[in-house]
Length: 371
Image (tube, rainbow, N blue to C red; front, side, top):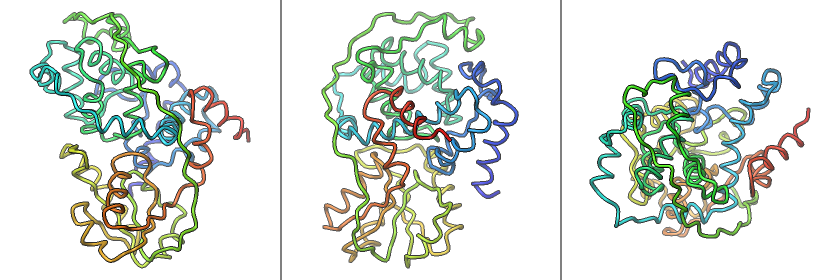
């Protein structure tokens, strides 16, 4: 099945059959065998196989309570917030921790902590490359406050194993749990909350969680100028990444180039590596898209330097702050190449509203989308 048809089928099925009860059921994690209360489209939205603004447009007819629409908006908000504060990403990728208890880290990563729920989620993360959103919050809270491990290491673990791993949503969500995004108001997991929303799945093996909040130092980050669409002379090649694969209405753009390279960034920079299953999932998406663009070619990151040698200017569909942007920027700096980033109109518009809290962002978004 065409990947766009597959993704839209999943979304439409959720809207028709389960959206009506979403606001009541969304916080429950019933386990891997029952996910009907959530849409499970995140692996498609994170790669923009499903474009978040198209989803929101479709939901106008159905999501009267806007609970599900708000969840889609969170992804746009996180993306815009990281664009406004790029130094957060720089600080995150440069994090080095030498004082951590290596045995504790090993126990946490391998699901050997003795905390039944946590160890179960580790297994689920590795086996299914997905966690319910509420479980991600509990997991992050236990990682930070009960185990006392750096949030950055947990964020890297998620990004390594999640099919829907996204630089902005992942990094900033972990900071949110740690209390670094909400002015020292962290999210503290509780046994009562876990038991309620997992329907007592872990009650047979009771655990003890920390109720102490360790305030994490939060360096001050100043907002930077947002990008703007620039008018460089177009090159004859276009480069695109796996986290913006929505090719709808872009045939004219693609046809204006002699070659469209779809870059596969399997082993990511800064010493970070994707799990084999996540790498393969991304590669499968890339192969699917490659079959839909007549003049495209898959380009693996380790062959980028040789394949792009001789080009002085390259047009690139902007991948957003994250490892992919780091990769192309580093390549451009090392080889003295001019990069002309091509932005989506909606991104440039709505990122302007994402410089503070989510409430202000969604209020501004809805105000400009009343129709």
